[in-house]
Amino acid sequence: MREIVLDTETTGFEPEQGDRIVEIGAVELFNHVPTGKTYHQYINPERSMPQEAFEVHGLGDDFLRDKPVFADVAQAFVDFIGDAQLVIHNAAFDMKFLNAELSWVNRGSIPFDRAIDTLAIARRRFPGSPASLDALCRRFGIDNSSRTLHGALLDSEILAEVYLELIGGKQPDFALSVTQGKSDAEEGASEWRPKPRPAPLPSRLSDSEKAAHAAFVEKLGDAALWKRQ
Image (cartoon, rainbow, N blue to C red; front, side):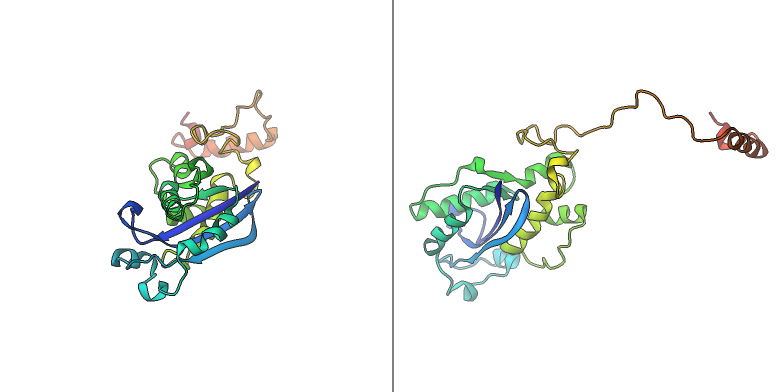
């Protein structure tokens, strides 16, 4: 099974208001294992960079001026993702930008059901807890110390590690916390719990050890914790 872990950086929040993609980063997984194949592209948005967006990713007008426009890289991007499932943190955001850019160059949109939203999975698994990429890195002990600014390829590489943890680690088919093969709505709805033993295990203490313990407790007096039953 081929999957593409993907992230974008943009000039803002709304393509309908003129915001554009300025960076795409993607990492290929096969059967949940990184293959080493990546896609990374900076893109000239053909507009100025708002200061608020620059402070997030550090991609300014001077840096992006000589980069290709989306129309020039669209085919390479489409070829790389192929028909693979897309793994995205906050998929609604990236998908609306990708489909807007594709529509502006007269290409077909990507069906939304191709996207696995790791933000939604994290919120179901850990309700009430922070679900940002940084928060999930802290939860799973993933090193994100190089993430001083947002960067699409670096964030995709980090998200690939987070995704594997969210679905049960590097052997997701053996995960106990997420049931494979269920829909997103069912996934995370219940956690695995061990069943009680049909019969308790026999005591491993010998009669002499039990007697020695009882004698020790007797010396402690009536206030001993073992007598508070």
